[in-house]
Structure formats: C-alpha cells, structure tokens
Image (cartoon, rainbow, N blue to C red; front, side, top):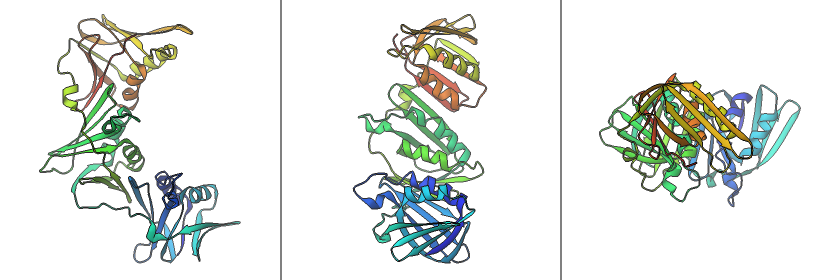
Length: 367
C-alpha cells in the first residue's frame, strides 16, 4: 500500500475516526484504525475505527494511489503525526510490517496489525431507510442532546429517542429533571412507525459530521443498529435496549401563566444572575408580574443578584425557582428571536416553547 494525500483533509478525517478508537483497551486493535486504499476511476482512501458499539467509516477522495492495499495502525499516534506535519501532502507507505509516514524532513514508522482481525464497520441488515437534510438533523440533535442523562442507572435515558411516524421524525432527550422534544419533517414517508434509542455520544458525533447544510443524511434504522450516512461518512451505532419514558405524558397540556420574551435578553439575564447562585441549591428565583420578569440569586458566602427584563405576560403572576443552567442550555442553541414560557404552579413543571416544533419541559427546584 502506498498513497499520497492532502494533509489537511487527512488530518480532518483522522480527528473524526480517532475519536471513536478506544484510547485504552485490553484489545490493542481497538486503539487502531483501518486504512484501505483503492485505485480505479475514483481513487479513495477509506478510514475506519470502532469501539464495538460505535463505528465510523470516512472516505477521502483527495488522494494519489501508487499501490492499493490496507493497513491497521494506532489511531491517536497517526493523528498526532499528521497534525504536527506542516506539508501540503503526506505519503504513507506499508513497508513489511510498518506503516511509513513521510513528509519533507520527516519520516515515521508505526507498527501495524493484521487487517483481518479488525472488526467490520457496516450495517448488519437492510432496515428502514429515511432521509433528512443535514441542517435539520443537526438542529434536532443540538436541541435535544444536552438534555440526555449521563451515567444514570436508568440506562435508556442515557440516549435520545428517535421516533418516525409518516413523514415526521421526533427526537427526545431527558434526564428525569428536564425533557427536550423537537419534531422534524422528513424528505420521505415511512409506512410503519419506527422507534430507537440512540446513544448521546453518537448524536454528538453526528453533529460534527453533518456540517454541510446542503447534504442529505440517509438514516438506516435496524433492530439493533442505526446507521447515518452523509458526505462520505458512515456512522454505525448499536441502539440502547430499554423502555424510554412516555414523553407525551410529561408535557403539560394546561397553563395559567404565559410569558413571551426576547431569547437573548433572557439568556443574558440568566447568565448574570447565575454568577451568584448558591453552590448548595443551584437555583434562581423567577418572579413574573406586570410585564416584568425578575430573576434573583442568593449565595450566603458571596452575595446576591437581581436582574429584570421586560416580557409580555398573560395570566396570573407567579413565583418559581429553577436551576439556571437548565434554562441556559436550550436558550443558547435556539435561534428564534422570541420564546414562550408557560406555567401552571410554583411546584409544577414549566414549559419553554419555540415555534410549533420545539418543547422543553423543566422541573422547578426548591430554594
């Protein structure tokens, strides 16, 4: 195997696949990536990595193939080498049992492994295929992934729920204290309903891959896997086995107070008030009355803060407390100028809405 490739493009691909390779593993081959060079009408260098739960395959077209072949080598070391080299192109050559990486004034040798021992990165079955724009999928991911649980014994909510009904895709994230739900429109319609729980890590990586808004993402949903294909990159992930909470039952249907406000003004006010939040309570008090919202924070050790902002209030005045970080998370990824919040009581969940497709439910805290 011998190939000359664009260094910048190779560095970008290596940064992606090395993020999947296991840094430490009793199986050294899982710390590696597999590179395959193919000649012909479309010379291609394909990089693959997997941790047995998530696999990634990335194609690079900006290559000159001298000799086709394949090699398995340490992912992080190769990525570090390519990152440090300043040349426009890099040459990689398989010499006996070593991978040679060459640039002007530099030559590196990495030990290799048997490619036949590398686990495959490919869907195991046909499954159901749906299509959605990269821009819309990235939007849905960004609006939900922050709400997923981390390291909880309720393993199902460590992932995001992906549901498909007709030409609508629903993505939901929750950690038991908050819930984010977004509805997207698909390019294609499915005849049967589909439901899978996808690890949050996969969704985070997908946001890095689906950056070109002009691309379409093909999603293949199988019984135990989901595959995402976009712009020469394939992500294949195992799904989480478990029962996801009924999100429809969590979303309040009634409210006694409704308030409309500028999103960035609300975000700024929360960030300022949060500077003096107590480390024990991690809460701010929110008071709504006469078209004004007042956000108060108090720390026995450091002081207190009160921030006011104008709002459009409908219904009853109310006092309620929240973890400010949980309100900041959706506000900083939304793009709408205005958002709406609805309340029913000081001890009941509140709802943040943006348009007709995004709903965020937040439990109050006690201060």
